[in-house]
Image 1: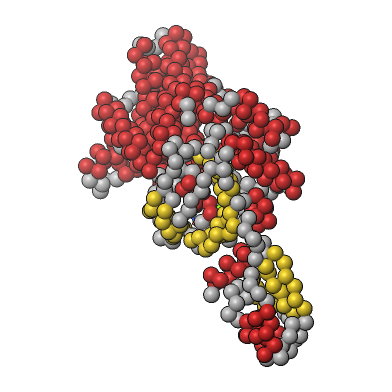
Image 2: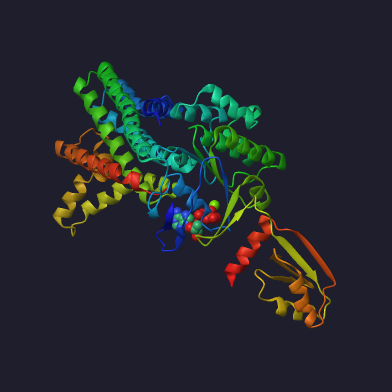
Length: 283
Length: 239
Ligand SMILES: Nc1ncnc2c1ncn2[C@@H]1O[C@H](COP(=O)(O)OP(=O)(O)O)[C@@H](O)[C@H]1O
Ligand SMILES: [Mg+2]
């Protein structure tokens, strides 16, 4: 899709000129603060929101299945009823449904009424229903919300499996950055309706450098390094994402007789990237 | 989405439903009270009193059905599984009309049956046309209000408020419109307008099954217009 914008009646732009592409067979993550426009983007992609500016190009008859916001489904009916109902509509075979039920480990509570489900159970039902139409693309809006760690691992593993076996494309949002990083091939960071940056999960990762200084010198060091991108100061620690040679930096500090008391580096994660983006935008 | 399957499932869910049978049963009991008192005391009621008493519960229940039918998928979030393409949205629209017709026919048959029993027990006037008229009245009522609430829900999607609004429309609005008709200062053309407004004529005339032909034409025309509007706009509406 190209230059996609969406505004609601109150005039605020919920999505602003977003360029976005994804292919089958890849997992794309979507992260950003509340109100950033993640759900809105997902609603556009799944055909729930139809009024927007810009262009949405989909492959021929690409089918999209989605779990967006938190549906109650038919709460007075069992999970099984819900599954049978929607698989009748979309022509899913019993075998197909049994596979989904088994993979999502839903069998034990399938006969219970959906209103008695925990959030995690409902999310699984939602994923099962999103898969019923045998989609080419799967859109999951915060699917791991309210799930226990086992459940999260199970769901993410299953999604990965689906991608591999059926070559579907997955767009997934979550506030748990680690999960998004683990499952995605690349991640869009979205804020105030615009894509801030894109993070590739398989690239040679940059390093997060942390330099510790003594109390007296930390301010001076901070002002000297102030032009490093995404620099961050916490007490006597200064950290930034950097993938170059450390020598010039240390030399630069050395000219003013400032030396760090400690130097540490670790691989940058989506989390570091995310906070860097959020800060960069705030300037 | 497979329209045939969808329609079958929705008919089964809404027509073979315990609340529907309870509502019709209760209407029959209340209308039956009149039939019984005519039987015991030989009057003073007429068949129109029978249909009016029957309609006390029946119109409210049917109105609730109309609202429920268009609001519930929004409320449950199942709309996200149903509204993913323009075609599916139109299938939804058409299925709503067919389902409410079926539900309305049930209410209409209940009413017709009661009039027949009254005739059988009390020897009061009856013709098969009464049954047809009763079914027709209920279908007009059901289809109009379903489409009316559906169109509102295309602009305003807070489901709880929508539901309250629907109840008010059926229970309170007709009396308010009735008051307008009583005020001398209101110009005659406004009074005419209100009289033929389906929001007024349907709840007022359905109890006695006394919609005039012109009322029926107006209700049908307005319903068709609402349908056309929904057909055109529903695929272009954000959810
Ligand atoms: N139906 C709506 N009407 C008006 N504003 C909306 C609507 N849905 C979302 N918004 C606004 O659009 C922005 C993006 O919301 P959303 O896409 O839900 O964010 P996210 O899912 O990233 O938390 C928010 O400012 C929100 O208030
Ligand atoms: Mg959201």
